[in-house]
Length: 190
Ligand code: IMP
Image (cartoon, rainbow, N blue to C red; front, side, top):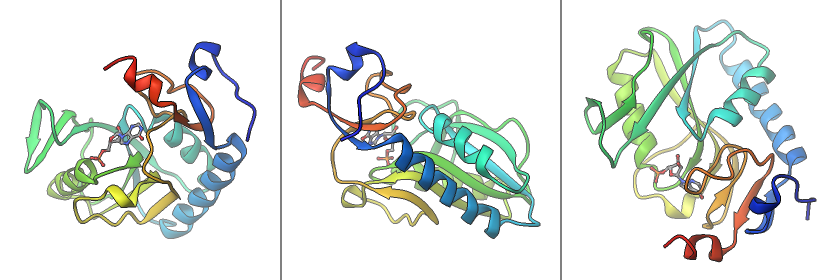
């Protein structure tokens, strides 16, 4: 198991480091190489899903060997949205048009797949030339909708994970690794 680094108050609730900094660095490099190869010569826009994808996106973007524009969306397939497209409600819309551009949606984790399925539909409606998904983590056992991300960093088991952008109640995003939380962390807040 990798050494725990980060604020001691966070580390107290971590059951196990699932993906070390080195594993993440290597895999993100591989994903960036794939994206760079697949989108060479194309008008690429990376669309980060706020807030969880920010850390992954920052590393992915810097490892690309081709130019890419950057956009962000806030998406919610469950809660209150501000802008609505089909089944997708955006809590933050794109700042610029993506019409005719090749969009790669960058997400931290695919769980049921509902958020991303709705978001892909929404981006297609906005006239993107193509829309693909690049997710760092995938919990395929939890899928309830049809969604096949083109790029997946790691398939993980069905446990709640934090770190490297992923949160529990807005905490743990700054941890440099992906970790499984101890059940006490949930139980103490429910
Ligand atoms: P989906 O629509 O069910 O696929 O939900 C995806 C969203 O749920 C992700 O963008 C995360 O915000 C959140 N989520 C799902 N599983 C986890 C987890 O293990 N840790 C942190 N957030 C998670």
